[in-house]
Image (tube, rainbow, N blue to C red; front, side, top):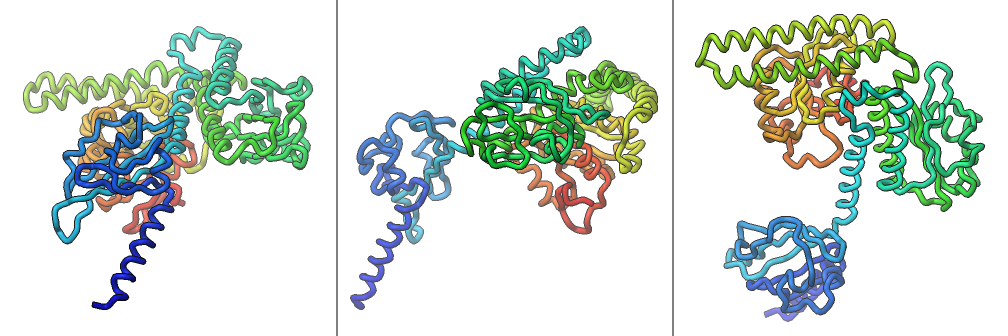
Length: 509
């Protein structure tokens, strides 16, 4: 035997061990009894004492399993274990994989462990932001109708203060609303700012109006890392050394600004800016829900259209959903009942059509619309989404462009309604409370082969891989994020599909 060969193999093994030991992830090798026989430095740092010869979970000490208790006895060459646990306030994803040698029986396992605390905290913060958005203007239509404009403003200011303090943990804040006629940035909420700064007259102008005026004029966020050396910054808080300002945007228009300041230089990072941008979207939604913008501008026509949508469009949608669901249940059984239900469905649609014609004609007298809207005038559009705010937004945006909109809460309800009429386009969330997104999408493709299917999603992971499955089906379809932006929505509805190519709606021109 060549003596060099075993020496070379030994060197390779030592080198492999050095590489594994240096990984940022925790790695442990277990024997057939799931006891640790080797662990790298990262894994050892999570253990209070030497983990060798200890059972895997025992070696980590006190842990809390986030998912069902892992069953190590089920491990086999074909089965791996994946679970998440909490260890000393850290979230760790565990994956245990069998190691086989030349098709022999499994005698060892490798545990790959990754600290996902940052990802978990980010997701929790995103979820909290979304929940905060719902709570900023958490009122039913009856309560809203009884409140004066001043009362609505006070409610919003109270909720904004609470969430900004508790969720974002900012103490020096300023929110201004843009008067579209005068371009003046009207103070809405100020805390921690000097009285001079709070009362300062600012306009949406790049020069001479501080960072706030710059952001309002450009629609771009601005991160000021050092206030002592910034060309746009004007003193806000007396001891401010760092600030960030983001635009508040509704339907692609800047309607205000959200500003935060800190006494520490470089205290805000890009991630802080991103969370501030997300929160500004929720502020915009709350402003719209409370009708502060229309009240500020005294736009009574827009208020009338919103009132019609709120009082009639949504209940009519529910009536059509109920009728279509019952039709699906008794199809082929009771002809008289079927005829009555179909009549109810047709009458509900006729009522909505009449209201839509009046609202559309009134709305076009007072608002400036994107010219691409003429391409979708007369479209019959179905919206399937469990979020009531999204359904209301779809009515508010699309009906201004002459579309007739029907909305449903559940995926299966959307299928039933799709079976009762012809739709030009269907906006369908990738997640549904009652069924997998892929099943809903494929059913809609079968029922409405000529409709443009547009998948929608909030910020977050597509755990059911609905978009990927749709792409693998070979269909072209746009995908847009919520809350809807007018430009993004019009792109998805009007752009031409490329030949033989799946594309995201942002690629449509």
